[in-house]
Image (tube, rainbow, N blue to C red; front, side, top):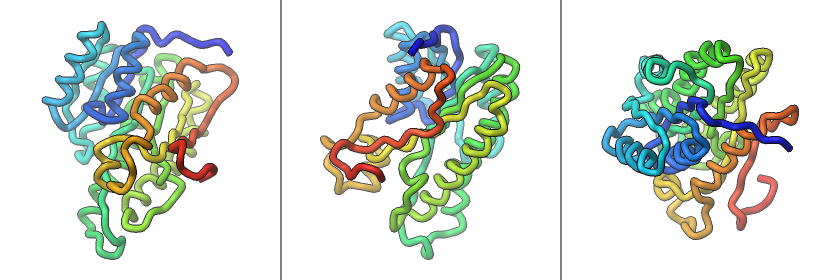
Length: 243
C-alpha cells in the first residue's frame, strides 16, 4: 500500500500536554507536521513545545479549558491565525469521574459531557470549514473502549464516550462528500495518569503505551487510500480478545 507524506500539514491535538495526546503530538512532529497542541496547563504545554522543537519539530501552544463552550472556536481561530490552514484534528482530551451513577451530581454530568462530548463536537464544527477549504482532511476521535462497553462506577464517563461515538458515526457520513475522513480509535488500558486513577488494580507493565496509539494515528494518516478504516479497537495483549 502506498503511503502519503504529512510534511507541512497542520494538526490540532487536544490534551497534548501528557499521555496519549503528547505521544501523538511527537509522532506527528516527527512526520513533518506543524502541530498545535492544547491543554489547560501552560507550563506542561511549554515543556512539550521545548522538547519537540529540540528535536527539530514545530509546535504551537494554545492554553484552553475545553469545559468552556467558547474555547473550541478560539482554539481553531488561533490555529488558523498561526498556521493558515488545518488538515488534521485529533480530539484526544478527556476527563473521568468515578462513583455510582445514581449518586452523581448534575455538575459532574455536565462537566464530563462538556469536555468529552460537546468540545469534540464544537471543535469539529469549527474545523471542518477550513478542512473543506483545503480540499479535505482527517478527524481522529480517541474514544476509549468505554465507547462501546460499560463499567460500573463510570456511568457518566461511559455516557459521554457513547455520545462521542454516536456523533462520530453520523459526522463521518455527513462529511464524506467533502473528502474528510472521521476515524474512531478505541483503546483499552493505556499507561496514562487517567488509567492509574481509575484502574489502580492494573499492572502498569501490562498496559499499552501512549506511543502505541500514536503509531495507529500515523498509520491512518499516511495510508489514505481507497481502503478506509472507520474504527479501530485496541486491547492490551493480555486482555480477552473480542471485547
